[in-house]
Image (cartoon, rainbow, N blue to C red):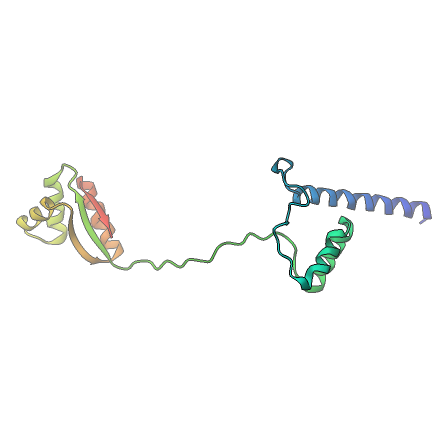
Length: 165
């Protein structure tokens, strides 16, 4: 290759790299309407004395040198400077295993709801009527999830309203 060709290729590569860096800076820069100047960004960050000279050196570096430094640090320590979304602490919610079924309303369909309560809970007519009349009332405690949901579905089909607790 001639020196002219080498120079042309080097210039194209450098200008492409500069263009890529300009795009990265545009993406990383705050929006112009945010009202923040370069001095205001990060102004509230307290730099410990032991890092003060290092931070001042980094602040004075041109963008190309900063890019080079970042890539070097990524290779040296096997890390990435990419922005990572960090979720808050994981919250473990233990699923309930026992439910209480509470009749909150007969929905104006007292007799059909009474029939379902009587049939599902194995009660007599008087006991079922007393439970439906005493709304809100606990129909059954300590039920498994599937059973509680099944009871809720049957009562709601009859016109009543149920809450699982």
